[in-house]
Length: 540
Image 1: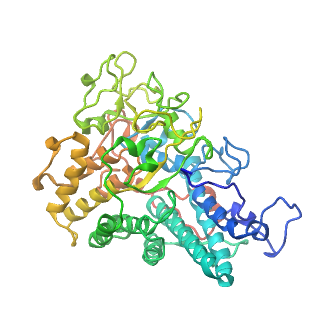
Image 2: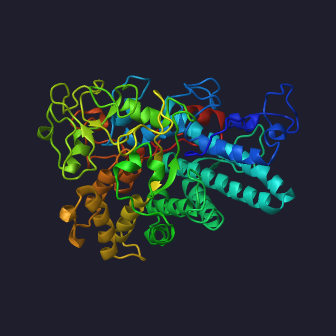
Image 3: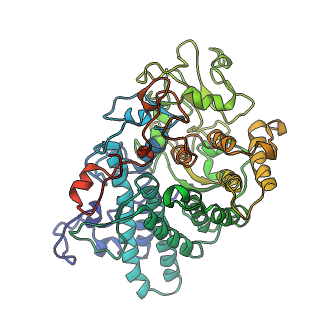
């Protein structure tokens, strides 16, 4: 089967709330339909099903699917509260890569960079992060006991499952480090019950995740030996490289040499290879791409949710854009001229006869019909003010129907980590002075990416072109809409402040400076009130 199957199971009642309360941890529910460790982990196969649930927390946000019915978290619509949907929004909407037309709650505040601590979307992602952490903790705690009594192949499988759960916990804790900084901290050693989790500093959480990943780098499956959709040790190497490359932001300490150590392992030992077909990585058959290291998987029949990739494809469609395998557009997200200009594309390149103009750099997949679209975003609430993005498609790369096609839900996976990102990270760490790499190799990696984009060597660069400004722009060209942009802009010192302005930054059409404290999101107001151990981030 193409996808890792997501079984809809309740893991434990206690993990449904981060501060769940019970006086007797051994109590069994009166309702036989309520799940506990006793009836969830009933046989060997159930452990894999429970692991699948942890993976599923990124793709779907409830127990039923199809748009709702039994949400994992309360306080926000199940489809709005989807992990990937909220992560995508908080990573892309505050940047030069995306802008939102809708009036849902405070959604426009993200591109304006005017959000507040009581923002419902910030609270939703924060809750999703800690729901995944807590779900993983429960699985790790349960498998500890099972491993002690297991033997043979089953014991090996349990150890592999537990390593994957630990990685997914580390992955979500990385989101917490990157987006919130100083947060509550719990592991499998914290039993479910009524308590206020302790606050951990951003630097200390960095150290914890680093140690976990170093340990997992030899415990996860060997490269390319796991099922598609499940992580292997290359994902741990990649996440370590992400930590180290952003260490100056997270801890104040430059770790680019360490980043290169693990990037060399990803590139030279990982077994993932460069995909000659850029389009394939964002199409419904991207599970066949040799480049994607870690995907969040979706399937039109088996992962049905109005979040995740269903959201990305539908919300970015409207105004006469081609449907590309979906049943209709929602007219929400599009991009602005600052991103499109990085491809040397201007308004005059588009026409009513050719609204999907493709420039020399074929990575620029945009839509603009001058008959009914407006290049300048004078009205944020009008979807056709701006430029449409057609990068992700619910069709195979050859244009044929998606696998397990459904009229509403998509089968396109989201590429979390891929090899081209490692190439660009390598080049950046070399330019920033890290040891363990060289400029000639970095230029070679960048040119491999650009030759795929241009179809020949006409876009090649030389060592003199390899600057930080070039690399920031190249990351936008290669990785736009893949949830990297906010983190990248912060690392390059361009996210807040006035050094780099874009349309409607700072709630000003021509762009204005924003406050530097917005490099971190606030701790949600509700969690501050519930947990006296927490302290609000500076500026909020």
